[in-house]
Image (cartoon, rainbow, N blue to C red; front, side, top):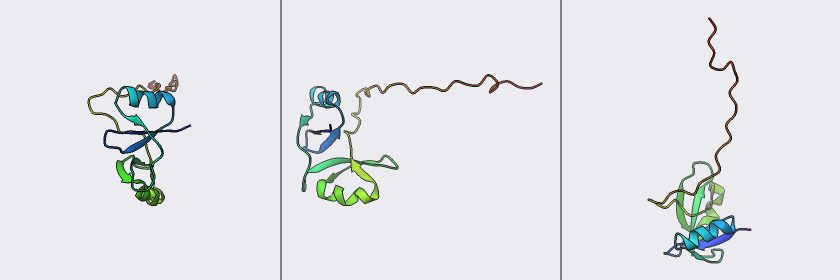
Length: 101
C-alpha cells in the first residue's frame, strides 16, 4: 500500500510503508493527504539519474515517458538520514590479495 503525504507548502510525496508515513508526519511535520490531481504539486524523481523536482500532477503525468516518477520526500538538510539496512558484503576469495613470488 502506498501513502501520500504533503509538505508544509502542500507539495505531495508518496511513501511505501505506514512506518515511513508516521516518520514524515510525526517527526518532519508533514501531513497525510490524498493522491495528487490536476494542478496539485508533487515531488518527482528521475528513474535513471536520480534528479529530484516538483511538478504539477498534470505535468508529471506528461513527463513519465521521460523517466520522471512520483517520489518519496527529499532528504531533509541537517536531519540524519533514516538508516537503511547495511548492504551484504561478498566474501573475498583467499587468493584475491596474494602475490605469487
